[in-house]
Structures are given as structure tokens and as C-alpha cells.
Image (cartoon, rainbow, N blue to C red; front, side, top):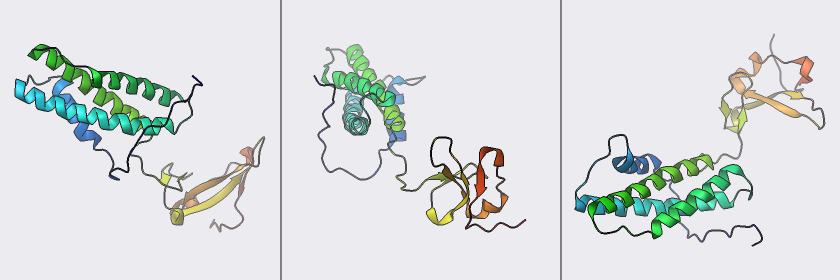
Length: 191
């Protein structure tokens, strides 16, 4: 092997994000602090449900993990979780309710783990092309129209970088001259 992972085979899917809270709630019915003890019919339905969730999450997490470097730690962890989940999908429960319940619980644990991997790899996060941090309030600035460059900070080994703020916060930003911050020339600040 050359150390690469082939890309997952995917179809053009539903553009809506995964409903992770619903998936986790379904899994908690089987593995939560006080799991339900379902009837055989309920267990068969719950197993089909979590099995479908695992199959969907495996595909989604594999897509996110494949987009990362091979040695990226969250992606490596996700790939391990994908392997365990695939193994659980290929398992068949032995006859009897206790064995079927254990099998369903394993699948439910995979739902929880894969949902965590999905979030850790950035799944479900808003896809913004422009994201900066406001120097004044330390909140994300997602709208480029609400952004003001308030300073340019010189770099030690490179060209430096811009310091941003929300438009309404720009006048409150205090600069640190000791760290090489200079007022951005195009921003007017009131005393």
C-alpha cells in the first residue's frame, strides 16, 4: 500500500445538514444513562434505524476525512471509527433478544462516535468564505460588509497580518505598538 486512502464513493445527496441531535437521541434510547428495554419488534425497528444512521454517517465522515491530510489526527481518529462502524454494519446478531440488543447497542455507540467525528472534522459548520475575529469583542465576523481592518501587525519572519474588528467596534480597539501594530491607513478613528 502507498499510504493513501481512496475517496469514498458518493452520490449527489441531500444538501441539508445531518440531523445529529435526532441521531444522538435515537442512539441514547439504546445506550443512554437509562436505556429502554424494547420489545423484539421495537428492537428490530430501532436496529434498522441506527443501522441506516451508521451507513449515512460512515459515508459523510469518510468524505470529510478524505479531504484532510493522511496524518491529520482528527481524520485518523475518524478513519478508525469508520472501520469499527463498518465492521459493526457487517455483523449479524446471534438469535435471541439479548444478542440482538447488544448488536443494536454497538450500532448506537457507532452513531454517537461518528456524529462526534463528523463535528470534529467540521461537518455541519457554516461554510463561510470570509471569517475573521473581532479584536474588540473576540467574536466571529462572518459578514465581509461588517468588517474593518483596524491595524497591520508586523511579522517576525513574514509580511505580517491584518487586525480586524466589527464596523461598530473599530473605534474601541487599542493597539499594541510593542507588538508592531500600526493603525491601518484607511480607517478614521475618533479620539
